[in-house]
Length: 92
Image (cartoon, rainbow, N blue to C red; front, side):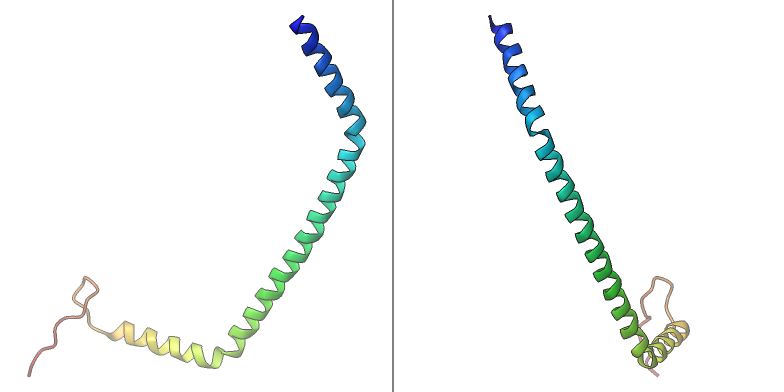
């Protein structure tokens, strides 16, 4: 008797799934379309943000390029004792 009820339950669930299949399919298509639209909008916003950051970096280039050059020259010519720390000052 239990097996018959299980088969009957599976048959009822199968009928419900068949009847609701088109509704679920349309809902899935609408969700997929919404995700695609949001993905395109998000991607375009990301590209716009990168363009703003690039324009900001280019506008400030006259300031940060010489600063980087000076920092590079100072780090190139500073003396260190091998482990990255400066030696103690020598009293004359």
